[in-house]
Length: 207
Image 1 (tube, helix red, strand yellow):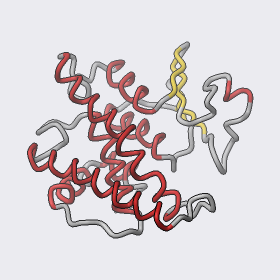
Image 2 (cartoon, rainbow, N blue to C red; image 1 turned 135 degrees about the horizontal axis):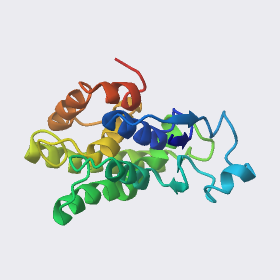
Image 3 (cartoon, rainbow, N blue to C red; image 1 turned 90 degrees about the horizontal axis):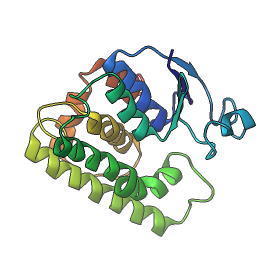
């Protein structure tokens, strides 16, 4: 059986858990990460030298990097609705997944560490303000995309882009900071909240 190594509260682990729930894939989970088994353990580092979660073990297959794992699981199960086989359609899904990992994550990181994690290394008021502004600007990019599609990130169909960005949207709403009114994004968040797998893994079990 597929084994997922990583603590359930981790946003990157939740991507994998949500994907498994969407495709009905059973798994065993081991809780690794801060507050659980330490990822600097040699046994864990032998699987992922970066000592980060999540990691999956699927028979002889070992993979790390959450977005890569989600793509692997979708293809493993033949879920072309989540990750199309057509080259251009797949590239469009992966384009938004890569945007989440790059531009969006880089925008929110300082603000999140300061306002949610209360990290002593992230207390510079100007840096927090700049990060919040960047984060809101990136969500504005997603707002305009959703306004065009009217449903999910790439149109009517739900894809892996919605898994990784849906979690990011939840984080944006859950962080105590000023944010603009983005109606398409709000409707998207509500639409995702109708999915049982998102309520369980995307909204941390919140109603």
